[in-house]
Amino acid sequence: MNNAPHMTPAFLNVEVSTTGRRWVGPSGEDDRLAEAMAQDTALPAPVCRTLVRRGVEARDAAAFLAPTLRDLMPDPRSLRDMEPAAARIVTAARSNQRIAIFADYDVDGGTSAALLIDWLRSFGVTPTLYVPDRIDEGYGPNDDAMSALARDHDLIICVDCGTLSHGPIEAAKGADVVVLDHHLGGETLPPALAVVNPNRQDETGDLAHLCAAGVVFLMLVEANRQLRDAGQKTPDLMAMLDLVALGTVADVAPLIGVNRAFVRQGLTVMARRQRVGLVALADVSRMDTAPSSYHLGFLLGPRVNAGGRIGKADLGARLLSTTDPREAGSMAERLDQLNTERREIESSVRDMAIEQADQRGTDAPLVWAAGEGWHPGVVGIVASRLKEATNRPAIVIGLDGETGKGSGRSVSGIDLGAAIQRCAAEGLLIKGGGHKMAAGLTVARDKLDAAMDRLSELLAKQGAGDIGPSDLKVDGLLMPGAATVELIETIEQAGPFGAGAPAPRFVFPDCTIHFTKVVGANHLKITFGDGISARVDSICFGAMDGPIGPMLQNHGGARFHLAGRLEINTWQGRQSPQLRLEDAAPAA
Image (tube, rainbow, N blue to C red):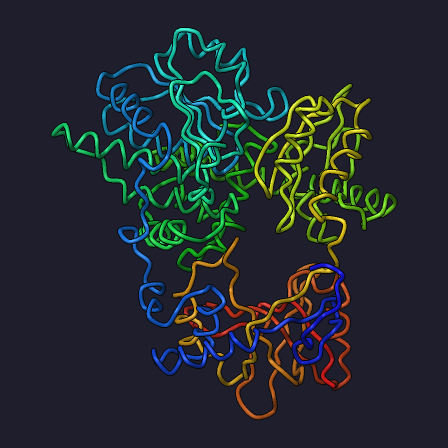
């Protein structure tokens, strides 16, 4: 939000909550639409509020609650270069040509590569997998790797990278190159046979929300169509949706349009536990319930990412594509260990970055920090922490020798990727790119301050300097007695929830705290009620690191408004409602 005066009263008159936020409830019009929808559809009022917030009308409610791939699937041919890309890959598969897959080292790159490996395996083709080392090679194709791959392969498929790789693709002499990507394109395209990317500058932007795994899946749909037209049998794509779901959630792609169906149906596929790599990963992550978006984003995704961040870059993609349970178990254990190491490294860098950003000031259009030897594998995560703490675009850079490699995260409405590309074009960055919400860069040490000043200037023109503390948007009131497992299951039909489609947030008003307990290092479990109906259990992660934990633990009998998101807690086979507490305010 900006600093303009508020025209509507704060929800429950909470102008400044315990965490310093203003609570904003639904508009009067939203209230009226939700009430009318409840009457027309007989759906619970909290579900109707959630649908209205999504812009769903009453006549479309039933279809929205049951998204199908058939209804939401776009025509793959609506993307430029899709037909020649698919045709070239089909030809290579049917002719048993030598194929290399050059993949990014994150979850989106790993799932994209695994999708292609799965599909090519149906033709008896075993492609070469190449994932660059984050530290030695950096993001995307490089001249040496592409030249070497071209000497031994007929076709190179770049996934989740390549759109800006003019030089490296030019270096791939003697091989065809197909790019399947989603990162922001430049004014010109590299000399590839095909560049399929919904974020090319000459695209409509209708499919800009796809991650690379989604783009690869659409290409496989088109490839299967071409095979059917030729009278050939086609691989089963529906069984691959678990990979698309993981890539979509882990890459924080907006859960709108076809992405909703990808994730919803991908979770169903994942629950069948047929992909040995994901089974092994779920087991080391100690998942004991059916998979959800939360599990993909916070348990599985970070572990797949850990190989690319601080370990062997191709470990995640190899795990996702293996068919050997023993190999899968070994790789999953290694990724779990690497993820623990990553958390320790991240914690150290985070503390130093926050201290530096505080000294520099966190009210500028750009919050940034740079440090000697900061591990490139964790700077993106730390940038996310800075962004969340300041509600500002944030960049964190690890310096090594004469250069620094960094990663940035943005806030809604501010296009960080475009600003970084502009700086690269102006010569202030060695290279840089990404998309609106996340981007990477390489900068010369002697141009660091100038580059950050210019980035701050560009972001200020987008309004980044006028952003105030983030509001807390709530979807309405709920009484403890109404928080049932049945209600939560119905609300979840409006999901999956995540980026671009947050889970509804409800306020339990005027509640008494009956029980508190610190769990782990800094989390707080509480039980609360209104003195009339059932009590509700709640968990507030990281509560003791901020003001909310001590306040609720030392409540002294005071009553509070409690805001958060509902979830189902499963313990020893028993299900119960639980509030994931995010904020609180003393009840007047």
